[in-house]
Image (cartoon, rainbow, N blue to C red):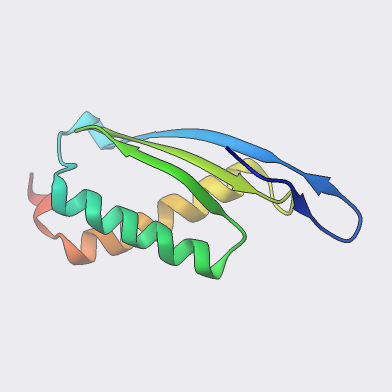
Length: 99
């Protein structure tokens, strides 16, 4: 599952299971949108200390299993993930806003 993250003064294994719903529970998470979401999450992994262990989607919500170091609060991690994924998904799939 997860692995221990060692820093200079601590050793942790923080795992978070996040469930993010689509606004108004609209059914917009198609195959193309899911692929974009996974690609954006891989880009987030490269630029931050978040590791996505699992990403699962249904038609109206997304499950993330993430592992992080105790650098920021959970709400800051959620904000980072939701901001970056939403911006890029709306740019690459503009049909989502019209549904």
